[in-house]
Length: 337
Picture 1 (cartoon, rainbow, N blue to C red):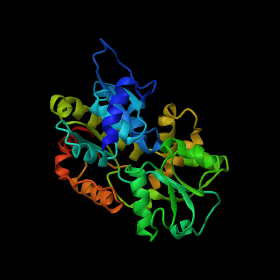
Picture 2 (picture 1 turned 90 degrees about the vertical axis):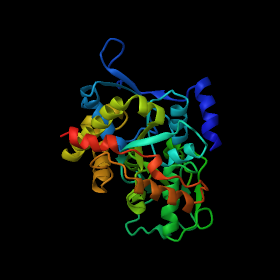
Picture 3 (picture 1 turned 180 degrees about the horizontal axis):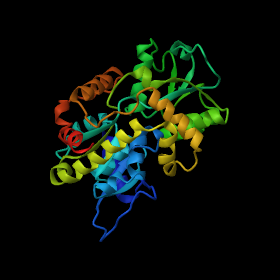
Picture 4 (picture 1 turned 135 degrees about the vertical axis):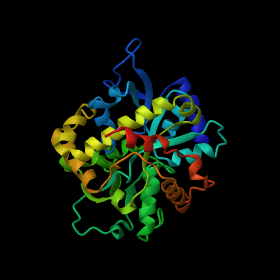
């Protein structure tokens, strides 16, 4: 997709990435290997990653993580391709777009973080008897066309007999991170919003969470870590240690309460109170959002590619085994206890 190539030039001339203080712990002479990691957005949805950072799991693996936020899968992939990031966290479907550009040094996913989409449908009023049919004739704030949140949302709408922009108006020209503000400002009847913003809008009595897009969309490899093929080939030990740290974060999240997880991730969400964070995490845990391990199966990417086709993104199918390696995740299951 041409937007990725354009964004490479944008990043080289005027980077649109935001450094997140407190993630880097090393530096020259520290004995740590620095890894530049770019996440697609900042959300409690990626809690195991923040746990791995706050609990020192990356440091245990000898890694100093410099974390930046895209935001958006297109910017994240551009960061990888322009060599301003070593590893990225985004939807694996992004690797299909890059591969179909003819990139020789294409991007490969090596560790899965989440197994469901992470937005919640927020409405203007409570709807205890909510049905997706309620959206017929209404306006819905979605995400960027071709991105994971928007594709999942359209997939859910279609599964409930609603044709986007025929039965329900879907606004897709607002940056995903700006959707909560647009909804608060009065745009749309409904919006698909990530946590913690969904719960924060509830607290301000601006909106009400009435459904989970992730639950409606079903299991899928929604967010995964990826790197260019050349980086993986040259740095297998770094990829392995990174995967080990993420797996420790996943285990920690599975073994601790929402309140304990909230305390661990709060440094990354300075505008959210502990009670809000705990509420978000309880929601995500209740719907089995986070993987219990980082193994990413080709069948999961096959499902995503079928979804791409079903919502009208005419991408040429790619052999999922080309874009996925599970050897690092498999080894992490043996090395990490």
